[in-house]
Image 1 (tube, helix red, strand yellow):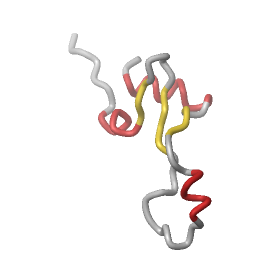
Image 2 (tube, one colour; image 1 turned 45 degrees about the vertical axis):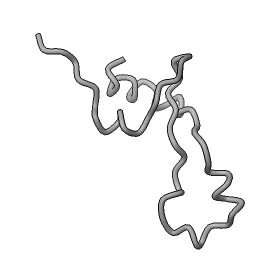
Image 3 (tube, one colour; image 1 turned 180 degrees about the vertical axis):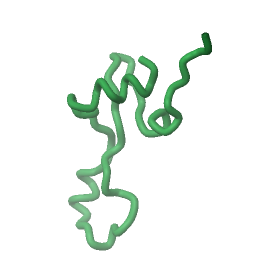
Image 4 (spheres, one colour; image 1 turned 30 degrees about the vertical axis):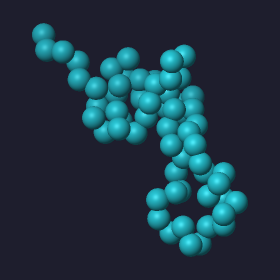
Length: 64
C-alpha cells in the first residue's frame, strides 16, 4: 500500500504548532489595501487558530 500524502495546497496554508493546534494567516491582507484603514490591517497581522468546524477536514487533508 502506498504512503499517505498530505494535500500540498493545505500544507502551504496552515502550520501545526508544537501543542498540536493548526494555525493559519488571516485573510484580507493581499490586495485592495488602499481602501482599508491602518487599524484594520494591523488587526489582521499574525496567525489565528483554525475554526473548530474546520478542524476535522484540515487534519484529514494534512494526513493527521
